[in-house]
Image (cartoon, rainbow, N blue to C red; front, side, top):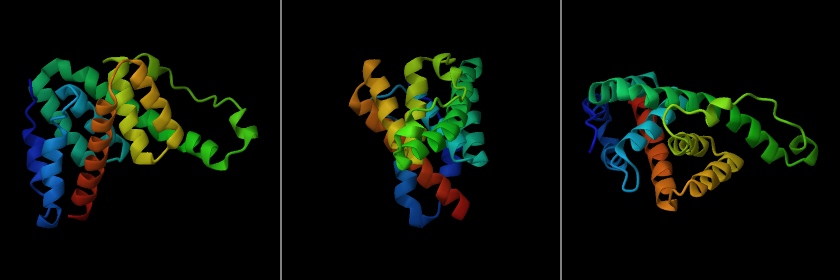
Length: 180
């Protein structure tokens, strides 16, 4: 079952002709070959929160609420949580990785992130959302951690690949909206 996205489609059509490829990519990646439609849209929404695009987030939330009613709330809640937690984690863990000192790696993070273990959807869905955000931040440690978790949850590398493609296209879409 696909989820209609008329509000997002309307936003997509505002992208200028120079970004025709992005318009087409946005349509195609959200039909994730190896993801459920709700997973694909959840990843896109988390990435929208992560890159702070009110316009993108608003359109996608409208579409989810219209299509799923109350069933959209767990997706929206987890997307908001994943976007926020990953905004924190990608800064912290990228710092640790880039500095590369054992002294920092030995220190506990002491940053709350309990929500990652208490998602409103599923652990796999939350991990997919987090993976997309990690890609946007370019955090190697986060990417490795979330991809490993997803494989342990019996998701495929193809599903992980779809999540990264969604993150990339959401990023390009938001750049097009801002600069359009």
